[in-house]
Image (cartoon, rainbow over all chains, first blue to last red):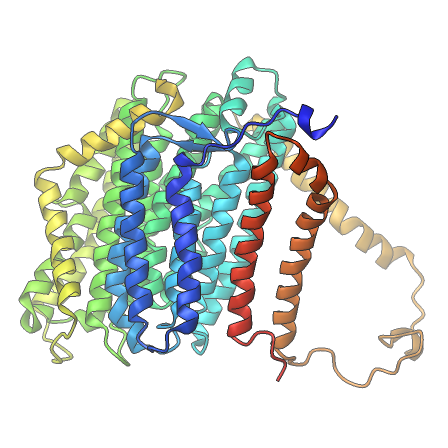
Length: 499
Length: 124
C-alpha cells in the first residue's frame, strides 16, 4: 500500500490551540531564561504569568459546550475540559504569585527552571484534562510527573528535599508502571485504547471479564497513586513535607484537578460498564483515606505534613462522590454525584492554595514557618491574616456557611441518595474527628502567646491575593450556587452517559 | 464479588513463583565450589583495582541523558527520511508530513540550545 492510498485526515489543531500556545511559550521562555542576567528572573516570571493569561484567553475563545474530537479521537475538547483548564490557569497564576517572594529569597529555587517546569507541568495537566485515549492520558501524566520530580529536587542542597524527590520518583515510576500494565490488559481484552471505543466494546460484552478486572485493578491502583489515596498515599506526607513550600503548594493544588479529569474520563466515560467492579474499590479506598487521613493528621506538628494528611482525607471524600455515581446500573444520581465530586475538588484546590499561601506568607529568607508552633498568637501579630487562615481552616473542616461545608454536604447528599447511609455516617464521624486538627490551628492563633514577634513582610499583591482567597472561601460559602451550576453543566455537557 | 479478583490473586502468586523459583533452584541445585578466581568480578582476566561503589561524576548522567534525546531523534527521523520522497509526492500529506518533522526538530533544537548554553556540553 502506498502512502497515497492510506486513509489520512489532517488533524484539526484548533481544539488544541491552548496546548499549542502553552508549548510554544514554554519553549520561548526557556530561551529567554538563557539570556536574562537578572537574578530575580522578573522577565521570566512576567512572561510565565502572561502565558497563563494568554492560555485562558485562547481557551475562552474556543469554549462552545460542544464535544469535539481531534487527533484521530485521541484528544477531546468539551466544556469540562475548558472549565478545568480555566481553573488550572487560575490556580497556576495564584501559585506563582504566592511562590514569587519565597523563591526569590532562595537562590536554588529562584532560577528560571521553576517557571519553565511549572509551565511544562501545566501543559501535562492540560493534556491529561483533554485526553480521550489511554496513551494521551499516560503522556500527560508523565509530562506532569517528570516536571514535578525535578521541581521537588530543585532545592538540591536540602537532604529532606532530595529524599522526598527520590521517594516520589521511585513510587511515581512504580505507579506509572501499574497504570500502563492495567492499560495493556484492557487493550488485550477489548482491542482498543480509545476511551469511547473501549466503552462501546464493553457494552457489546465481547471482552473477557477476568482480564478486564485484572487490568482494572492495576489501572485503579495507578490512578489512586496519582490522587494520593490510601493505600497508595505513602508518598504524600513525605513529598509535601520535603518539597520546598512553593513546590508543595503547586503539587497540592493544580494536579488534583487534572487527576480528577482522568479518573472521570477513564472510569465514568470508558469503563462505566465495569462500574460494579470499580465502585467497590473506590469505596474502600475512600473510607480508608477518610479514616487514616483524619486520624494521622492529629499527630502532626508540622503544618505541611498536617496539610498532607488532610489532602489524603479530602481526596477520599472526593472519591466518595465518584464512587456513588451509578447504583446497580441506575444512572439517576450520576449527575449529582459527579458534579458534587467536581465541586469538592475545586473547593479543595481553593482552600489548599490558601493554606499553603499562608505558609509562604509567613516564611521569609532563612525561616520556613512550617511548624504549627510558628502560628502561635498570630492574632496578636496580625489579626487580619489570622482571620484569613481561620476561615480557610474552618472551610477545610467543613464548618457550616463556609464553602467547605457545602462541598462536603453535596457529596454526602449524593452518598445518601445512593442508599448507603452507613457510608455517610462514617464520613461525617471522621470529618468531625478531623475538625479537631483544623481547630487546633485556630486555637494556636487566637489563644496562645506569640513565639516570634517579627512582623509579617510580604509584597502587596501576595497580601491582597491571600485576602481574596480567604474571602472567596467565605463568600462562596454564602453563594455556592453559581459554581455548583457550572459543575453540573460541565458534567452534563461532557460525560458520554448524558449524550 | 470477591471471586472476581481470584485471577488477580493467582496472577500475583504465579508472578512471585516465576520470580523466586529460578533463584531458589539455582541456589539449591547448582554445585557450589567457590575459589578466589571465580569470586573475582572479572573471571576472564582483569584485576579489580577499585570498589565499583564509588561516587562518579554527574557529567556521565548528562551525557547519557543527551544521548537518549538524540538517539530518539534519529529513531523518528530515520523512518521519516526513508519515505521522504513519497511524502512530498503525496498531495494530502505533502506539507503536513514535512511540517510535522520540522516542528519536532525545532522542539529538540530548543532543548539542545538550552543544554549548550547551560554548559551541559562542556566537559571541563
